[in-house]
Picture 1 (tube, rainbow, N blue to C red):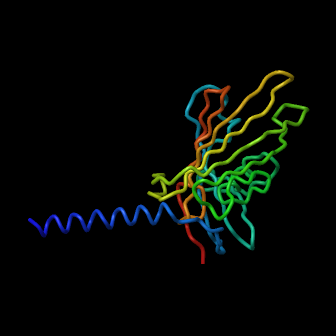
Picture 2: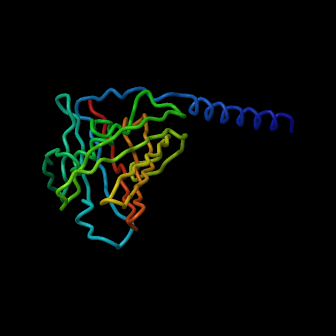
Picture 3: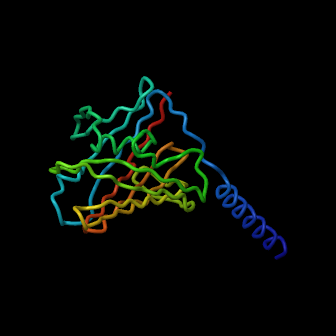
Length: 210
């Protein structure tokens, strides 16, 4: 009996030790390898607006020759996507911390970090630019499951707000999870205060390069 209690105590101690060590670690700036590849799925969780406006579907990011290229996947075919400001391609660069206009990842990551930034966008169909203010917080650790597997991740929350017209306003909240193992955001959930749409980005496959 004493031996069983001792083994149980030892197992609990190991578990607690592992949790604490993960909770105390920092995520350093990632070092990418030639051929690192991430496949991302973008989906929406409501039936409100036109799905085509949300660029649903599968995309692939490939680190090659010192930069990240973005491809759209259609069945067995894939085509490179030009990176334009506020385009899906630019947004996807944020998955690996390469969206310079939107620094949603700031290394080394550690719990308690906060930073702010502003970004100027021009919404589709608008003739005027829109200045948005964002605040990003690293709030904790979580284990996250995606089609690519189970990952220990840093949990971050981005709150973004902007003016609409002369008197209106809008805001969005993105919750996302960064995995040091894949050197990327493995999941992002974005909700808009004035829309029922919930946009979800998930990692469906990661292939390390050489």
